[in-house]
Each structure stands twice: as structure tokens, then as C-alpha cells.
Amino acid sequence: MKKLILIDDHKMLRKGISSYITENSDWTILAEAESLEEIPDIIKKIAPQKDDKIVAVVDIQIKGSSDYPFSGFEAVKLLAKAGVPSVIFSSHDTGALIERAMSA
Image (cartoon, rainbow, N blue to C red):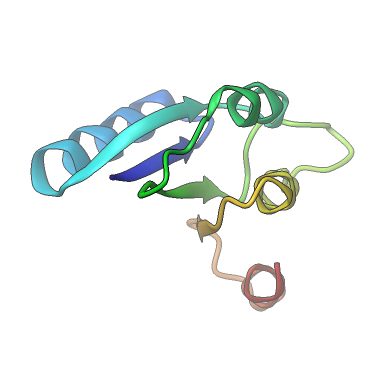
């Protein structure tokens, strides 16, 4: 089964993506988070079955430390350690962020 984890601090956007995916694809929404602090709990709760494909959709800028405004990169690192690949999205279009996202 194909499952998504949605990570974005804007509830309306998260719910919109969730609704669109649910209505227009064969993917299931496994979990949602609005902050970096929620990621470890999600990782603990997911128990992939043999045929599961789990992917996270992560906004670059989510709630996290004020010292680190682009906590989405940290979320990607946490998810990668748990074996969950991520797709990063953002409304930011600066070259530095795009390069960083490509190397995450």
C-alpha cells in the first residue's frame, strides 16, 4: 500500500493536500504533522507492512526552533534515518534553498 506523511505548519494547506490525494490517487494519508517536534512520535507509530511504500511530503519552513527557521530540512534528516524518503516543497524560490533541498 502507498502511504504519505504530510508535514506542513499550515493546517489548511495540509488538509487541502490530504483531500486532493485521497480523492485523486491510490495513496493513503498515514500521518500529518505541523512541527518538527511531532516527527519522532510519527516515526515511532509507523509500522510498515511488507508491501508498504511510505513517503513524506515536507514543507521546508515548518514550526521548529527560532534559531533554525527551515526545520523541514531537519524533518527530512529524521525521516531518512527511519528509512522514510521525502519530497520537499516550498514557496521559496531562492537559489540557496533550492540547492540545499537538492542535497538534503
